[in-house]
Length: 402
View 1 (cartoon, one colour):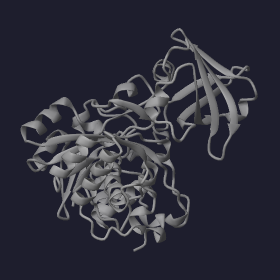
View 2 (cartoon, one colour):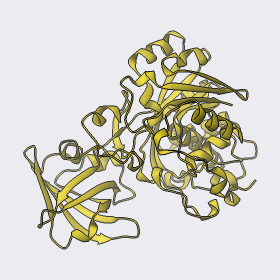
View 3 (tube, helix red, strand yellow):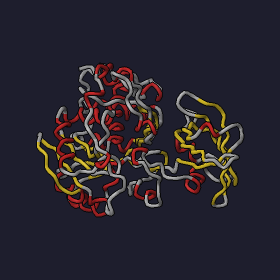
View 4 (spheres, helix red, strand yellow):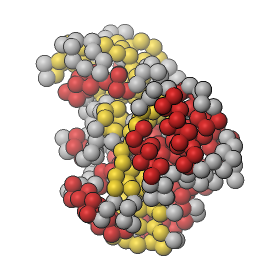
C-alpha cells in the first residue's frame, strides 16, 4: 500500500458530541484504560497501568510545556480580537530562543475577528505589563504580527504567562478556565513551546510514576513542541494532497544512547513522542548515508519513510551513525524539525507500543494508530464507544502494544 493513495474517508467513525470529554476528571489517573495486545482487549483504570507493562520497559515522555498562546485584545471600538500565537516567524529560530526574546518579536498567528482589526496597533495592559500587537501582513493561513511590550526586559515567555490564556482545543467548544492552566499540562512539563498538550501524558501522576519505578519500568524524555497543525483536518481526497505540519524536536545524545541500550523495550507516551522516536531512525539513516550532511539535510520530510531505501538498516546502526554525526559536529543534542507522517504500511522502527488517547475521525493521528494495530483500530474504537470511554484531549487512555 502506498500511503499517498490512502483516502482519509476510510478512517472515519461516528463520534457523538457527548462522547467528547469537555472537562478532565477530578483525578488524572482515574481515567479508564483500554489495553490492546495480541488482538485482545482488556479494560482497566489508568492508575493500574504498571500491571500491564513488562519489567524493564522504557516509557518515553514528551516534556514540552504548553504556552498560554491565546491573547484577547480589543480594537478601538472595544470589539474583541483574539490572537492565537502559532510559531516564531523565523523558521530557523529555535522556540527556546523565541520564548527568551526581549522587547519585541515576530510571530505567525491566527486571528479571530480579523475584519475588526484595521491599521491600529492593539494593546492589552494587565499585571503591570502592556503588550502591543502590530499587524505586519496577511499570509495564506496566518497573519504575521510583531509583538512588543513594556517593561521591555521581560522575556516573551513571561509576557505570555502573565497575559495569555491556555489554548484548549477548539472541539471542546468552551472558553478556558483557571483549572485548564494546570490540567492541560503534564506534571512533568518542562520546556515551553507547545500550543497544544501532549495529551497522552495528562493521565500520569506522581503515584503512577512511583508504581512504575517499583516495577522497574524506566523513563526517558524527549521534546516535540506541538503546533496548531495537530488540529489541521485532512481535506484532500487522498493523502498525497495533504501537507503534514512540521514541528520542532529536541533530543540529547544521552537519550539516543539509552534508546540503543533498550532496543525492543521502548513504549512511546503519546503520538508526539512516537513521531520523535521514529524520526530519529530516519535521521540516523541519512547520517549513515552521508556523514557530511547538514542538520537541515537530516530533517525528516513527510514522505521520507516511504521513499528512502533503508537497505534493512538496523536501529542500532542508524542511531550509532546519528551519534557519530553528532560527535563529528560537536553537538550534544539534536534540535530540528520533523514532518514525519506515520501511516499504513509504516512499521515501527524504535517503539514497540504506545500510550495514547482516542483521536478524531479522519485525522493523521488515526492513521498513526492504524500503522500500529492495522484494521483492529475499528475494533478498538467500537469497543471504546460501546463501553463509555471518553474521547479526545481530556478523555480516557489506551495502551496499544505490537
